Length: 389
Ligand code: ADP
Image 1 (spheres, rainbow, N blue to C red):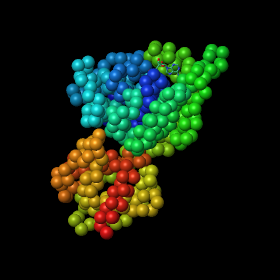
Image 2: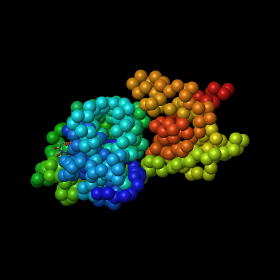
Image 3: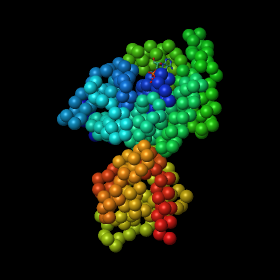
């Protein structure tokens, strides 16, 4: 099973649903297969700790194989898709404290301890709902964004709106909505709206979230999943398979617009004590609103925004404003970081863009879990300018 490639993952996409049973895992498995058919190297991280559904969907529930030493495992691979269920990594006796640091740890282990190899799109099948666990999990990974799966049902839509708001609050982009079980497709070709006429499209418009597609309720989808082969592979001519293909195309288009996670990296260098670079480099665009990012001096970072505003921030003040769960209490928002513990001569080691909306920064004190959203960096710059005057 070993593939011997170093792990590199271009796009992380989370798949979310407000509640269970709407077909989130089915859509994830089929979407993975559709992306693979389109030439993408695809992996699925099944983060639903309550049951390893990906194993069932792909007809392979074996445990992952050990890597070159006991710190690593290989993902499973079926139908050309690499996958791993979190539920496979814990045994029956492991108490699942499904919160905070534990979630971060698990994600860390899954990203660093699993030999994924080269992956273009990693789909993360989130547990249903938008509790703290899902949100911190969504923040622990540099996500390109979230795909929301819903059914046309009224009740499911209320929860779905709650989900939109929750992801928006933590600045995770919503890539689009998939409406599943959008009417029952009878063998005669007639579509019956079992859940009533859909208002998903109206909702998408109201919240300005793109519709990625609608998938009908079709018996093959269910039967094929039970048989361990996604419908798009087992019955490529079915209406559901075709609509999943369209969802995959729409998602690819969104991802190509969004840009790859970690697409831009800045490596800090040792500058002389009196050396300064006041002008940004000639860069077209780093990502999203950020046009350029550069090292001003040993302990200052420069940011040039698309609107022409240039900000210079002290590295230490960026570190002190770290929003991660180690530095700020996730539940109360209270600061946990003691400023005295941060060295005065702090530097950056390197930084990466996260999607089109944030920077991930590793500091010279080894701290690397902070993800800085652009709006936060801009607010920080305003604060610094205010304190100088
Ligand atoms: P979730 O992950 O949201 O809990 P599942 O993916 O496990 O939901 O799907 C729940 C059930 O609905 C499964 O039996 C699945 O085969 C079935 N299902 C999902 N989508 C469809 C569809 N479009 N047509 C028919 N059955 C579907």
